[in-house]
Image (cartoon, rainbow, N blue to C red; front, side):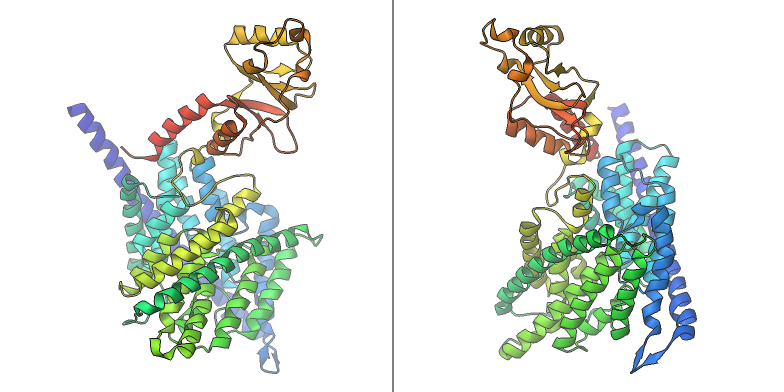
Length: 573
């Protein structure tokens, strides 16, 4: 009993110690990143803008140049490091699921600088996703320094992400839940301990240094009536559809820029000019940068319905231009902004149409924020907890839960289980679904496949295959042509009850016309589903959909073993 007790205490002491370290690293990274953004904001808006300001019918044309100038600097980095584009959360998911928690240190430094320039120069992007990425990246570096196991690295990277998000909003519970929902795709109770510790620590560090985490004070004393719940249901439904549309739209803009023959260095600049023009039209409403000032105005009822709708649409366009053109920045804050504006507009309309309800547009702004964000990220619990922590009240919880749940479910239907984060991974060939606890989904086919497998050529006879079955004990083989490309699958079921005359024929006559293959980047879950769908005991692993060169094989036994190993690594015992 004593050795087991010592082992248990020792393991948990290690986990808690590194959870605190992850929280400190994530929190300090978040603070440093915010200071860097502030420094670049001063450079562009306080030093540079006065020199380039030109008044044209009440509009300052100098605003147009600021994001373009910042994007030019970012473009130089993007050309050298293309992987720094976007918000960083998909890279954390990829690191945890497919790379054993490893995030290259140089990648983290360059992305931090690029994102700070993007936001500081007025690019319409959020800092929360990049802050989470920075926390995860710094923790990954720390874990490698200490030579920690792969499972521990993956957990600590998730802790670093939670610490960064928690420190941004002063919401440790929501920060922890975001990490669990987005990276682990579900909540494992025992894993909550280190993630909560890191989240609380990261939040404490941010508050200790900056004295304030979130720049907006939500109005107090707000609430809603029971008859309004159907309206929050409709709001969630509408914003869920819009979130799904916008997630797809963002990547269409990415495709448009990537497919353009424009010099790669100039693509972010073109996006920057577009953002600058939109920001010039509304310089004081949060189109530039993160957008918290515009959200504050919406929460306090300082904007009319028309302006709320316009700002929501303009922010969508500005964010699409920023992210789509290749700049580095997050989607977290823009999602909150868009949902807040459209939710507040919905609330103002409700107050005008149904004055007897006594509707408070601020509640609709919070519910809209939760609904749109939940649809985009497929992380409804994060927003429900975040609103509760930000308002320090449960009075709006039914409304927020209703809208967030509907936004999540509606967008999930139209996105097919994807999120704004997993859509980026899908484009890279990684198949990860959201909304459910993952075990096999965290293990790639490339990790568990058998390399240099036994195979059959299409010119062999069934007699030779029969001999191979007796010799190896295998009951299924991939069939390849002279170029080592998979052309079929053959197994013992294809040979049984064949006559001697048939067994003298070539394998190509008997390979299955419908058969499944998998790729190294697919998950073990997807491979298992293919094995069941095609009723095979083995899946050939090929390079990709267009290149069917044989790399290895994966069997049901491989997947069963991976499941138990993954289950063991997923939980702390």
